[in-house]
Length: 273
Ligand SMILES: Nc1ncnc2c1ncn2[C@@H]1O[C@H](COP(=O)(O)OP(=O)(O)OP(=O)(O)O)[C@@H](O)[C@H]1O
Ligand SMILES: [Mg+2]
Image 1: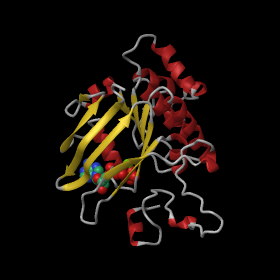
Image 2 (image 1 turned 135 degrees about the vertical axis):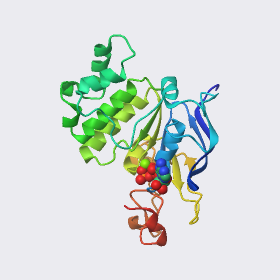
Image 3 (image 1 turned 30 degrees about the vertical axis):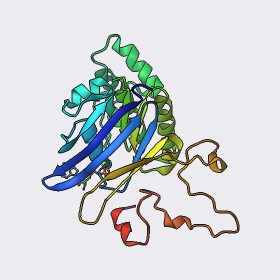
Image 4 (image 1 turned 90 degrees about the vertical axis):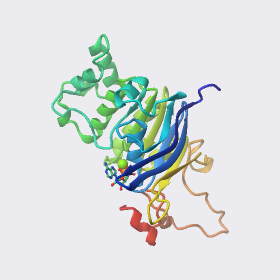
């Protein structure tokens, strides 16, 4: 199918004064899918998002959006093209109301108030429209941020840890919201919560250090196994269940946060979970 790949990066590399934060990332995001990037703290996931959206200039490598080379495009032009990201730290205007935040994101459009209210309704914030964003509970703030991201009508949304620091109730609410918005667009998300990844994602890429001396990040995308015994046709990251006659792997051998390091070994130092 033409244009099946919405986003492609080739050899994406970022060095900070000789420190290699992202090393030669190749990725291809298929239109209409939900991808997750997982990996330990400091692996370079956010830096990768910053490169893809040109909040940082790559040291090397190219980025293609819908087949067009956007490697040198400024961040605002990339957002207008339909590649829009959210931030790891909630980025709303705290002393504007909820409605004003979304209105601002829509500023270039006609009938702004109607559209802003429709977006607030879509993310479950209609009743909060007159409240200042600073008064919102954390989970609702992230929902507001998703509304302001949606206001730009993205074809591809990059979400950086959308459920980080949330209560379980908020995690479930935001997961359902992402599922809803992903029905009409492509999503690439960084997420540490593997239940969220398993619920939402079609493909998972794991990032990690290449070696102790540097050369930081690689991503290998794989399709999560669909484990019908656990959850119907839902993508699942769990290990296969061993037959009763075989010994099972103790759950403690798997890191709940990064799914990459191994608790109780030297590799554990790469993760703060
Ligand atoms: N502007 C910068 N200058 C220097 N080093 C940086 C800069 N931005 C990021 N780094 C370094 O690059 C590495 C990757 O950081 P990054 O924030 O991308 O990791 P991450 O995978 O998003 O981690 P986390 O899961 O904690 O959010 C880290 O060692 C970080 O200190
Ligand atoms: Mg990060």
